[in-house]
Image (tube, rainbow, N blue to C red; front, top):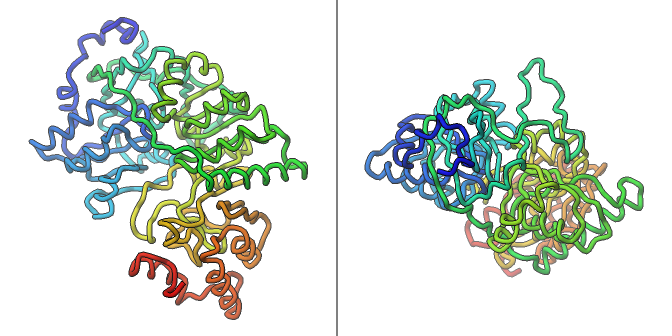
Amino acid sequence: MPLDRIRLSSLADKVVSAEEAASHIRDGMIVGMSGFTRAGEAKAVPRALAERAKREPFKITLITGASLGNDLDKQLAEAHVLSRRIPFQSDPALRKAINAGEVMFVDQHLSETVEHLRTHQLGPIDVAVIEAVAITAQGGIIPTTSVGNSATFAILAEKVIVEINLSQPLELEGLHDIYIPTRRPFREPIPVVTPESRVGLPFIPIPPEKIAAIVVTTKLDSASTVLPPDPETGAIAGHLMEFLKREVRLGRLTDRLQPLQAGIGTIANAVMHGFIDSPFYDLTMYSEVLQDSTFDLFDAGKLNFASGSSITLSKAKYDAVIPDIARYKPRLILRPQEISNHPEIIRRLGIIAINTALEFDIYGNVNSTHVGGTHMMNGIGGSGDFARNGYVSVFVTKSIAKGGALSSVVPMVSHVDHTEHDVDVLITEVGLADLRELAPRERARQIIANCVHPLYRDALTDYFDRALTRGGHTPHLIEEAFSWHARARETGSMLAAGT
């Protein structure tokens, strides 16, 4: 092991195989693992756990930052290792186990998990498994491409297993800003006042005697699966740019805007590409996941600085960025997710929040998580942290799915993640509805006129018109409110017969 990777000589004899390290994890334990949206996850120990479970069945509660890469959630789910999973996932096999009731999934705002650990509502953490670039001479852990909840896991855990990943460049050192809020009831303000604020340490500080094992790995992060912009996402981006230009004309923003946040996935990433050809400049980001678009904006000269909790890239972008990370590093920070997503900071900085909806209804309630109201997709992630506390909360989605069989705009959402009180702007490729300062009836007219696909506009107009005859502040036909979802479950399409 090179000395520049384990700089505390007393830890040299802690280097063991993944299987031996995994033996510290036993049935019934609560385990915290690094990893945030397929970046910086521990890679060898979870695989060893899955293999051991095939011979020796056992179950654990697994807490991460967000989803794991390298099919680890899939392997752990199929090996029946997981009894409980917190707070986010995106794997089809794990999703299947969750929806079958085999794995109890706790869908949490990403800013809240470590608060629950710190106040003993959750936990205690028995073992933390953290991927690292290196261990400092004092025993501090230098993370790799994500921070997520790793710092608090390592600080609170009884034992820590460190995976030193030799494929991660040492130039990542210095990228991280590890700040842990002080304890309530005497918590001081978090001193992040700009996206560039550095307020913590470049490593996770723990007593070195807590490190029970060190595993050496070389496996890369998984590539993201984002797709390039298409005509629909291009149209969504265009509507957003026009909205922001109007905000500038009205004196509410300048051409430098305010710090941007974007959710994960193809649509949000594609929408962020719209800023490349926009009139806005000297932009900053205060977000969770730094995706391909972040580095495209850097390279286009549009973005000055980006703060996040992980770097999650496509293969081509990963191959271009990570070997050249020293060039980008002065303009980057990776923080713990409770800081990247902290309501205090989001409100202070006035974030422009851009997140993705599965569906929304005519009054502006948004479903981000449940298909048909019952089946979990991925989880709420950090969208709620930003939606409730940002300067302006934008949700984007294509107006239809499954070739038009499903409408993304419905009479009433089948599951509510973000209420109408937290949603300011809705955008589809059809258009944009600015809902700020509108009453429910006014919101409905804006959404139907501007966001609904022509296939469904007449049906939604008819629903709303008939609901108006019933009266009420938020008019509904309760007996029909979920009829579109029921029809889709029965026939595969929300379209009425003969449409």
